[in-house]
Length: 162
Image (cartoon, rainbow, N blue to C red; front, side, top):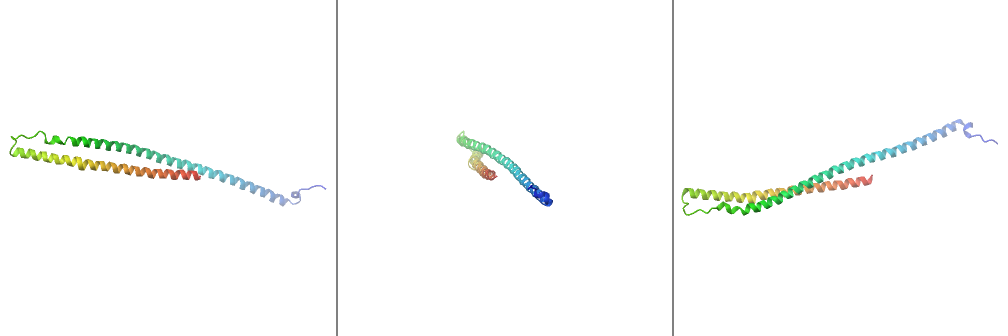
């Protein structure tokens, strides 16, 4: 008995079998292409996330440099404030002799009094306001950096999920 393939007896079965093989092959190819496409999309997303992370790290570094400069400025101002305060005694020098009497003596004493009040205002109010402003700016930059750090942590988590 000779074996005759079933396809020769029933050509439509051969066509169906061939068609199933083609469909399965197409499904495999599409599935593979889909996997490749997903991998490419993930790679593009990872690259985008890494760029975003690098930009945030750059901003953090820039803010750290600003914080360092502000801290140095605050230190310098505080030092100069102490130096400024130590020079206050010069307002009342030289002492006026008893010969200073009358209208000009009173005007001169008023000028010295006004200078001392201005001196006190500069040293206490204005310098303190500047130091406070610097402290607020430092706190603001540190808060911004904390937000950037949280964003970077989130990006790292997203990358791990891919």
